[in-house]
Length: 377
Ligand SMILES: [Zn+2]
Image 1 (cartoon, rainbow, N blue to C red):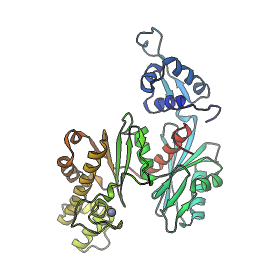
Image 2: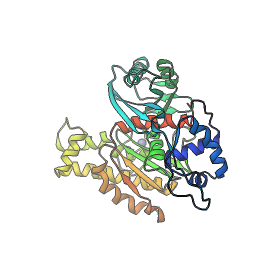
Image 3: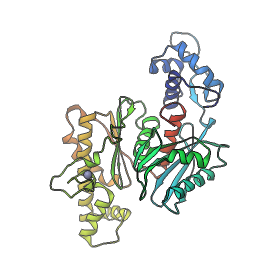
Image 4: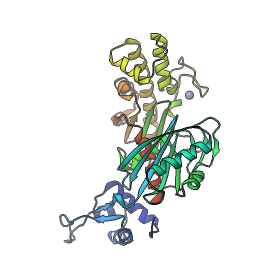
């Protein structure tokens, strides 16, 4: 951050204003546990550097008799590129300091070699303007195993990708600081700070797509897992007579509910070999029995997997997202309810389809949080 070195107290204050602003200093003090004098001291250099605004004075703050000018983050103080790597293309957004999306593009991916992908990321960032002129940092979200601390992609998303130092390569290609994070964890961070998870201490995000993924926030911290693997509800077994899973197990949520599994069942039942997911969703909407049953099976599997996760981690709420989730929702909720233990049955499930740009925005959110001292990079 320009001219401001953030102490842990400053990071806590900035994060509070970012996610809850406009907010008074008194309220920041209550949320962070710092004294109001400490908050005022911490805020002064951040205000001076232009990252925060004092909004017009509203009502007088309780007790002090002095007017309370609410604090808000100045959204256009810095801009960020968020890039999501997926099959065949990159999705890129220009995000402001409050993770608001100002522009979005898609860039075709000419190849999947490390050099081709890094060059495409650099082109995607350049589309947003000369690096450094407007965009100050780059966040990349990757399906696959990522060590966020070192910025190394351990495995995937493209054939042959093993231990790729992607953050360092993107830094070299763009001249900008870069973060790399697994895409499901990035989306969890975005929802934690800027979405449904804001203001919660414990929160879970479940994604249903090519696979079934889950990001967990427990006591305010993203769960990384001792082996970089945690919250893999895709591999919770829910049917011991179910299909074999690519992980080696049987009857995993993912083997039943991932998009390829749902579509394969409908293809087999209807003989429509060229059916894709949008076609399958459309077929279900016409009332086709095979399509409805395939989505229902997926909904039941995801619902049971979520119940297992909620019973173990007790999130305050769960967001479920993916292209076909609206079709799963009824069966998902019906399977979840009876399996959720006690008061956990009251944990709200929020089912929301998100556009591909949400994943790129999530990549930007990770690099915003890194800028203010939350996370490496
Ligand atoms: Zn599995």
